Length: 191
Image (cartoon, rainbow, N blue to C red; front, side, top):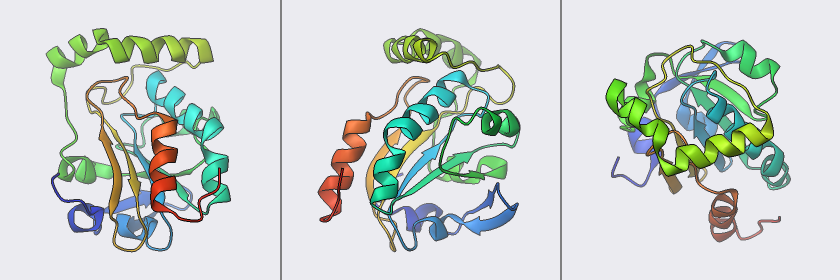
């Protein structure tokens, strides 16, 4: 995606709000406040679960204090109940049935060969070590080859302040980099 506004690419794409099973356009998620938007690979992935937990534990209170939305989007309902029961993510969850937003954003789909070799990249190994230290478990059910992304999006027009599509399973932006982007774009930001 070359455009610097989320609105022009996926703003009208519908996602399903998990709490009430209502379809809403993605643009409604950032219409009145900035958001940190996570596209999860899959809800059963232990690396996704540990990333969600780390963000929830270390970032969510800062977001709440600054009235910044915390949104997670998954590509399928498969594994959602277990993800919610584990309290991995403290934000609002949505489902992108059919991976429409993933496709529009051109988030990589690895396939078998690249999917297996990605298990051995440095960042995947490091994040796996971190995940094991956290004691987070997962499963192999569902679509395991779709990569996700982290975005920080400004209010109203959906200007992208940070775009971090994953290059491999363990590739995530640091919490410090997310906080820096928010601090740089929100004059009254408080940590």
